[in-house]
Length: 284
Image 1 (cartoon, rainbow, N blue to C red):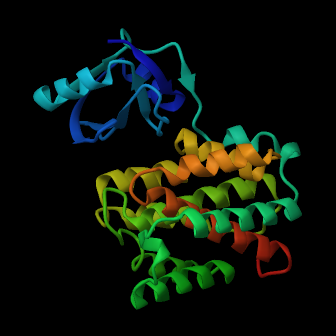
Image 2: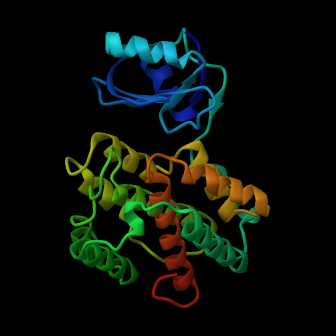
């Protein structure tokens, strides 16, 4: 078996280790999650699927999936490493600040994203009224960010992380999106905020959510996300054409059960917050 394409960061890990043994963590229709004894996370997906952080693609995915169901192990070595590497880091966006979208157009893009979600969104978790305790924690989180109050941010996260269903609970998807928006914004627009809340999210997630979600939040805090999300961020924050932007939204909406929608809710909320602050709010 030869790997068809691989996350560039994961490739460097594999080259450094030379040989890594993985066990199967979870199996899905078009993806299998693997984890090594050292705690290295990897996801193998079928050809044509968007690549996640620490992911790789194979052409003969159905056969590999059946094999992994039986053997429950997978070895990665230099013999199967690919020629095609994919950079899944947000510096692909932030290294071109001269192409950043104007505030006026960005506001319109956020409005369009919200309207698209209102029309085509499903009855996902974030679409319904949140339980009172969760809403109070979310309000406290936003107030903590606006007032640059680290302790309030940390305390509020205890009521948010891990809330929801699935391998990546809805609130974790939402928080991961907000982390990435903040990181992108910080690189391409002036900002005075000093709280790196992604660090608090990652610390607070330890043994409080699923292993898959914990890894996702770690990747987000490193500035890494899947190809489809990276494309949406690029279409949103850099100059782009309307049809390209809409296609990118559609792709993200199709992620998981409601995960794509939860990500979009987070993108909308954090972008709106930073736009308000830039216009004369507390911090930007």
